[in-house]
Length: 160
Length: 149
Image (cartoon, rainbow over all chains, first blue to last red; front, side):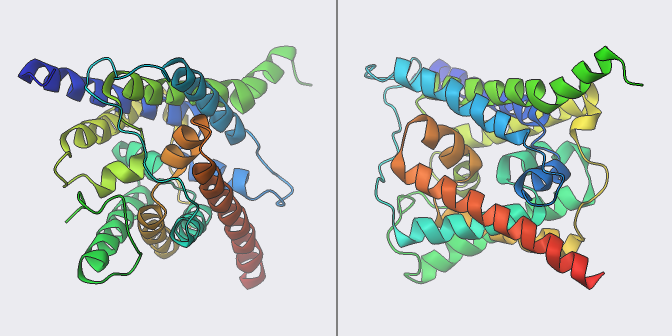
């Protein structure tokens, strides 16, 4: 399965997955920070609930696929499922999610839509993505030289 | 006087397009899982891009940009042309998203879509926290910006 051809097919599947993901994000309205903020700002008097449908559609399709595949030993084109290993709700998870939520509500961008909106070359999109990469790099650099953040499932495969 | 078809246009933008868009996101995540055995978590791909298994992550992120370019030509109104926030605020937001997603091991895609779809309690907790954080921040920003102007 790890022949050169297999590697190439998996890379193309990945690329195609990214294309489809971006089509879904933009069709759904996630690439518009104004709509994301109108969704999150529930008490504004002009609440836009439409992005809840994006979440509902995405979760239900993935849930059906995941359940359908749950008894399979391996994925179709690779040797194993890369299952998330972490199960407990740690302080690190909660603090990280809170910091992410703060940034999401502040700017109206989350990582996927920010990257998918890059071709529009809007100044705010570029600033968001550059600042996000800086945040990711700052985190991994800090972790490399200190023990801040506790144990990580990224321990053996970090950014830097 | 609004015609009947106008209501349909408004309605589909409000729920059918989001639902369809969401279904395509779910399909993408399902394909990546079923074919390659990988979770479609965007922040994880960014964080581990330079790691030993970065190839498929780079390919997915490149596809994300290519798909964005495709949609920019077919559906330009799916993208903003004016910034909703001053650029300094967007920069702070971006940095927080970068740090927070690495600390919390995921974002809207990894925890929100794939995690909830797997019925992971851990991801459900993360999703509740970042959704709550987003709601509080967006509301507070409106109040503070309103009071300042």
